[in-house]
Length: 351
Image (cartoon, rainbow, N blue to C red; front, side):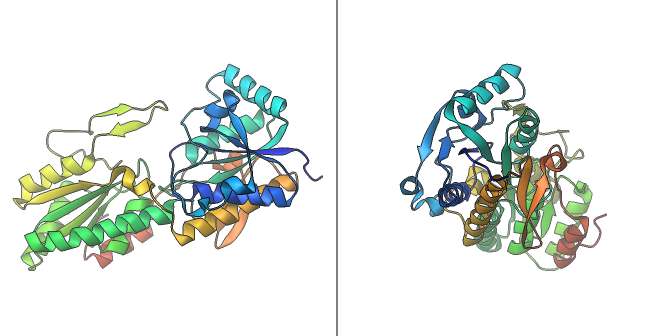
């Protein structure tokens, strides 16, 4: 049975390039089907507070190239408090919103699964620069982040070669090193360190020393922020606080790594922490197209009355994945791809 009613759309978790392109696609596709589309401010928090506004074709005109999200976002988890679930369901009823498009990463989509189990009709769209959402080959924001990190590596190459230094680039990736691996491969990094694959400092130092002996007077190391090195002198785990969702706020494995390499190798080392630059700015053409296709697909799912799923991309095709298959799962680095990257970098000893 075809859906009738209003469609709400929200963005949750961290921002990334391409969110506005997805919002634009949801609005225009929704209007084409005859639906009124309602924007929800600041993710689940805005829905709990009934902070909404109507979205029109005029409001989304031109936003396809904008970074961030015109709706705002938050890391509020609505399933932690039963009162919040009751509040968001009440807001949906009061506003006549019959279905939601929820754009988010692992945390937001896991919450969406539980909200759906409480009787709320919704469809998820995956976004995160980490590209670790299960059930899709690629997420909104990943391509842009890879491009930004790759450009940073290209720029670091010139100064590293000029000053005969080791340059370390720390990129985002709490539990997944897919961003680090992709950017490292694209930028020709000499070492790539990721959370999923443990590499001892002795191995790292040995490969960098070998480069120096071979007459290569500089090296580029890319490291994901969640990488752990228990054998770094003076620390077991980088000191960190936690955010409102319990996620670790890393102080920077790159800085620990830089000091350790300089101590062991006596080679001048510099560290660049790319930080939130990776998540900002205008999305690439690939992210704009992906976000547009997924936004259209989400509305199509709603139109046909198919809820409780996420729309994703697999082998170039739009697919629908049940949220119960997505929630609580993530995708990490493919060991075979990591091995290929290390082989190209001239490192064959990593296990």
